[in-house]
Image (cartoon, rainbow, N blue to C red; front, side, top):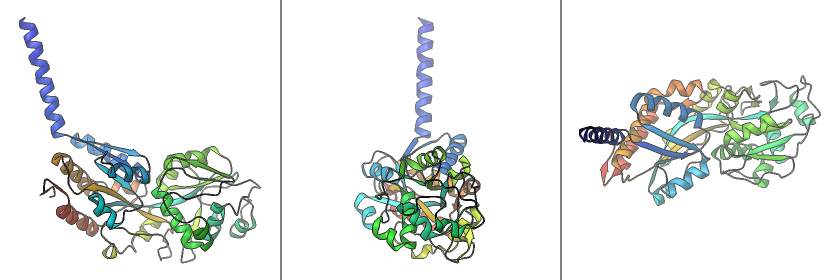
Length: 350
């Protein structure tokens, strides 16, 4: 009897301690853009090691992230196509940037090494419209007179889900090609030419399709090309220079960002930035959070996590070739938290 009483008391103590730990270390659930997933995963792992707080983030695409936060099934959402101020107001949301990164063309063409293939905007747009469907097409030859281009059919790999990466990429193609703008357009989801095209879910899916299919070309956030060692093309920027995708060329584009002109929600486009070293396809990725959290502990924990990410996550971001936000922009973001993010009418920050 005494032994049973002792076991019951021990079990109760363990459950009480577990409950206290759970109260002190809430689990925060998010979903959305695959563009920032590599850096979000690294931040979350390190933060959990240091604090015990779990940050679960599902890489399901910007469209999925927007749908889930509107449905209130997650604590935060991720998107690379920022919501408009009127939509933020309608759904009771705040939106803030986390990092910037480059979208790059990746390919699987026999005999062509990574960083050797040169493309300009109009040629890239023609490829993704299906107008150029062989690797030894004259337009590609003209840009690459020193390359031995294979007589290989081109297969276009694109996203099948609603995607902020697609939004960034198609916005660039629409800006450099009036025909692409008219026939395909820009957005999270577009109607790609059916012939010689394949789809993949998430940046992961497109990277996998390009690796698997000889002759394929696709588009991903640079970290996916970097981590999976997939060949990438160099692009001609608005200054007429052919530049490689890397942290330096992404930073060069980001340096021209004028955040003072960004509307509510910090919406900003960084495609086609001026400068000899600027990569021409650079996007900002965003977090969507609620203006009013029913659970104050979760709301506070979420803001503390992103505060830590801003302060201590920059080097991890740079290692994956993302560009961290400047300190003055972080200050603007946190001023927005202080004004907008509440629980029961009480501010959750600072």
